[in-house]
Amino acid sequence: MIQTVNGLIQPEELGITMCHEHLAIDLSPVRGDNDSKFDDENLIEEEVQKAKEYGVQSFVEVTCRGMGRAPKGLRRLSLRCGVHIVAASGYYLEPYHPKSVKSGRVEELAEQFCRDIQVG
Image 1 (cartoon, rainbow, N blue to C red):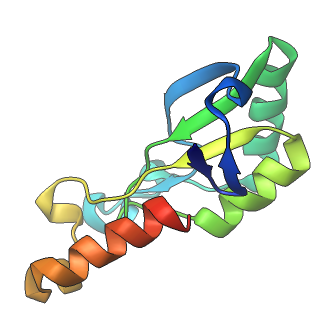
Image 2 (image 1 turned 45 degrees about the horizontal axis):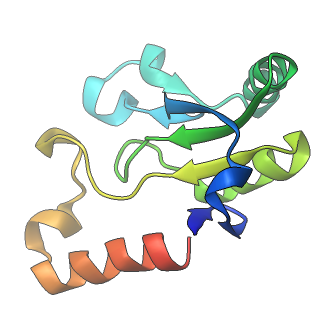
C-alpha cells in the first residue's frame, strides 16, 4: 500500500508518476527572497492539469518540513485535479530545520515521521 494525501492506494494505481516534484515550496525565510516561494494554487493546478494531459497520474511531492510543506493544500490539489500525491516526510538541510528539530527528542521526530507515513 502507498500512503497518499488522500489515503492508501495500491501500487498499481500510481500509473505514470513524476517522482521528484515541488508542487509548493517556500524557501524564502532562509534565503531571504520571494523568488524562493512557489505557492500560487491556481498556477500549480494548471501545471498539474498539463501533466495529467500527458498521462501523469501521480506525483511524489518532496517538499519537506521547514520548506513550506503544505499537506492540506496538496490534498485540495489532488482532489481538484484527480491525481495521486505522495507527500514527503522529514527535513531538508539544517538551515531549513525549525527550532523544534534542534531541541526535540529523537523519539518525537520518529513519531512525527511514522505519523506522516502511516496517517498521511
